Structures are given as C-alpha cells and as structure tokens.
Length: 72
Image (cartoon, rainbow, N blue to C red; front, side):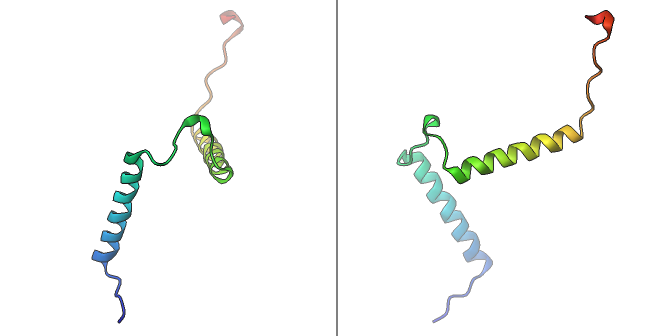
C-alpha cells in the first residue's frame, strides 16, 4: 500500500500542524517568558536577521542633512 501525496493531503497536513502549534501556544505548556532567553541558534538567527535588515534599510535611506554651525 502506497500513500500518494496530493495537494489536498499536503494542505491538510500543513493546516493540522498549524492547528497543533496554535493549540500548544494556547495551552501554555511551552514557556515563552521573555526572561528565559533564546536558544543559541535562535539568538544567532535573530541577530543575523536584524543586522541584514539594518544594512538593507540603511542602504535605501538618505542621511539627514547635518546641522549647520548656526544651528548649534
């Protein structure tokens, strides 16, 4: 017996996983306290994404004009 992967089954599986994740978040079983910190890989990823975001947004923003001597 072989199980065929169809679009319906793939979408049903993704929906089931999303519902399971929402159920876990709603239940409070997983500790999501901000004071507990992140795993090392999560911390690395978040800082990596932040640095890339800042670099990209900085490249597309013009610097503000510096204040003149009269403005000091």
